[in-house]
Image (tube, rainbow, N blue to C red; front, side, top):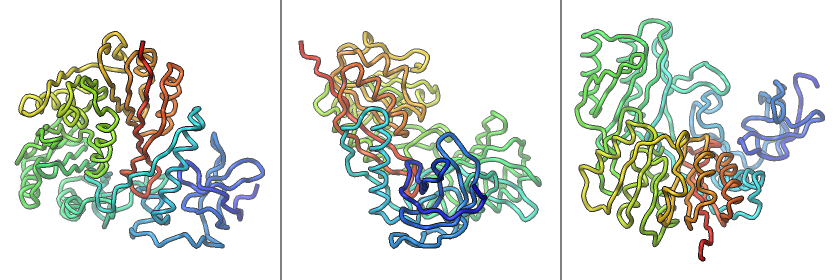
Length: 424
């Protein structure tokens, strides 16, 4: 093959790239739509086919729309802004269906996706670098370590994007040349929680500058992480999340769902899945996103392996009323999964593992007599793999619902309800 080719896109793959069928295998073309004829520069061959760089769109699809963000094409954050909503939704359903079919779930119905709106992202993790021209704050370019300095971010809440410019200014005064770091910004129920992660000590003068910045822009809490040492520069108010009325403290840069709308969709799907259940185990429970809504109607066992998250959930339990009994356990579910014996008597189990999935835990669940399992996942691939294990144990999966919190990206979350007939 020559380095520069003209190809026709035959479909959109599960990763969001356009796919062309070349003589030596598939070619994946970023930012290309089905039916388009494009000029590309061929890249390296990977496990599933060749990567490529889009050079020119020769014949453009009538479906293509103008991207919303001025950084599209350079920023690697939102790869699919050229897709209209209807096409993006259709691709999401087809992508999930194809992935599940690969894992033996050909008959599973994929429901209509629930996609978060623009300007809804409430947490972002940005890279920061001090260059000769000043501070660069933003995301990496696609498949690159080079940073794109953000002037806007149409997927993110305005409360967060409004501090980009003043944050760059204060960091420019603090960072020495060529110093790199990361910034995690989370919009909590009590305001913005800001964590700056950079391997450097800050002076009293620099600390005072950060305090002035936090006061001027109503930052609830600002922490500086220097090689594992967490320095609470200023805590103007405790960062908390509100889960079904429970005020739960949020440890710096801890995981929460990316959008309010996405969280609400996931919670509603989980509650619907366990409707009528009186005893529910919430595994990989985090700080209690599902625990507290579940505990409005059921007794809940919450189990989490990350100690700060488990402690935060316990703090929320201690300060809250109006919930049924919640038992909170700190336990590594990868090394010590909950056994079927330990979960005997539970009506349902909810599990929401990290991207790698919950293989060890579903191995322990597959032969249980728990009638309902609700799986929440941020990876259709690991969801499908775990589901294959549960299927071997006699569980059936009728349908799944995709939830798109990361608008214009190929990242998809799923909720599926597994059922088993355990009647004697």
